[in-house]
Length: 70
Image 1: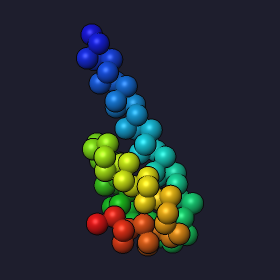
Image 2: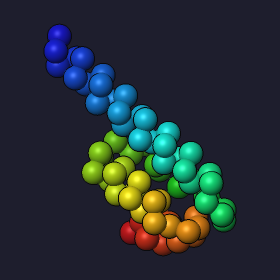
Image 3: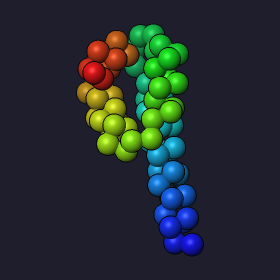
Image 4: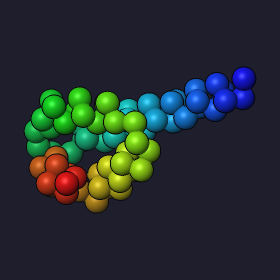
């Protein structure tokens, strides 16, 4: 049962990061491609989501964020 609880907590943290990323993206000037939103929503790798959060913190526009993602 502990494994199930750990899995639920991990999924909740992942969903929280995704929601935070999408929310922060909405505040950046510029157009956010719909496929980018879908890609971020489908991401489950915590290290990639953390990378996106760090990039968002230092990006001044949606275009800059997208160009730095690769």
